[in-house]
Image 1 (cartoon, rainbow, N blue to C red):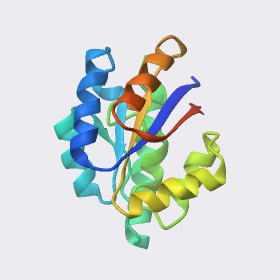
Image 2: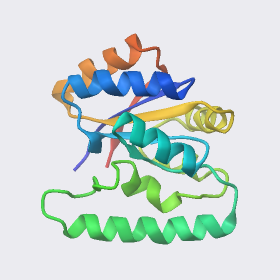
Image 3: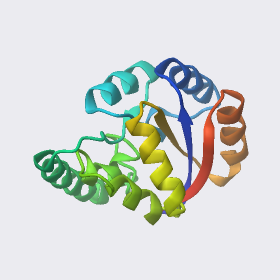
Image 4: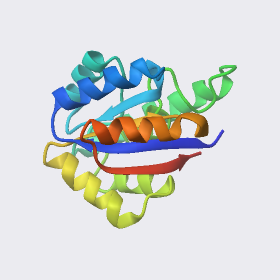
Length: 167
């Protein structure tokens, strides 16, 4: 089911943890929050600290890309047969789509983001920012809470806030 996803860049882990606490107070669940960082280790640690889910790491290795693609396909297959879950996987909302590019080669994050409706230049800029140490937070939401989520991210200092439609 298509739904809005709000993306925002943050300069550091503490900013992401703080905004995640605010989002939880708004009723955003753990499964609705995904964090994308430079490495899988950073992602896992940050996801645990913010009570969210890891999205995808930005590694430049072909073996990791193959492993991530297989893992993503398995996650997607499992998600489709779980009643009530659909494409938002318990392992992380961005993992359903981004999982297949976990450990991806350069440029695949751009591909995933553009397929969700993000303009290519903006997706490339987000990928560059991630490689330089920024953190991308994705919040899967519904139309009725979209404005609250955007306002929360903005007040917390989120940059490059963008809403896309996740399919």
